[in-house]
Structures are given as C-alpha cells and as structure tokens.
Image: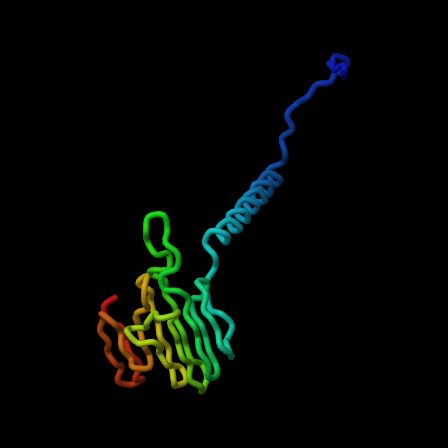
Length: 171
C-alpha cells in the first residue's frame, strides 16, 4: 500500500493548456468522432453507386445503383421481393436499378426466375447509350424510364427540338 500522506506538501493545480492547444484538441476530438460516425454509417447505409463497366454476364446486387455495360451479354437481376421483414414487407420492394449500354453490343436485362420486367421476361438494350431504369414492386420489375423507346411511365415527355433529347415532366 502506498502512503500518500508523505506527498501532502505537493500542491496540485489545474493545468490550463494554451488557447491554440485547446482548439486543436477539440478539432482532433471532432475528427475522431466524425470518423467513427462515418464507419457506422457505412455499416448501416452502405455506399451505392456506379459499378465498374461490365464486359461479361453479370448478376446485379442490391448494392448496385447503376450498371454500365459494354459488349453483348445478360445482366441478371436480383430477386425483386427478397426476404420478408418482421412486418411482412418485401425488403427489395422499391429498390431502383439503372442499366446502361455503353458499347455497340446488345445487353439483355433478365428478371430473376419467372419475374418479369413490365410483363416481359427480358428487356433488350440493343443500341449504344440505351438506358433503362427499373423499380421493384416486391414481386416483379417495372420500367420507370426507357431511353430506347424514350418513354417515361406515369409522367410526360417533351422532345427538345434542337438536341432531340427527352425532357421528363411531372417530377
């Protein structure tokens, strides 16, 4: 056991760091906390985005947002329904996916199993720069936007007279 009574003559006083040090200390602490939050957010809300350009058959995942394709092959979709959560909802319902043909080949977008894309078994992007945006309803896929036919479901389109590009109306 240490006898601290022999140190009673030592006077302790609160150390006050200089103002610059305190500011840097708080900045460091903020950066530590912010880094921890970033790690947690990546775990619970994984980053989604554009995948590298695919050149061979590919099966999309729930982490894909945009699938860029170059060549002639199929992009297989994941299950439109997925698992059922504790409330009874399909977890993949409402997920969106964009598939774009960046090359000269034909890209075939194929639903999972017997699932359809607007009632069809497949959707073909036959021209370069054709793009299709689809959304899951929990059992099948529905086309929201189709550059190949320049249609927008449930909205309106207007074609620009100079560029020939479609303008989506109604957002």
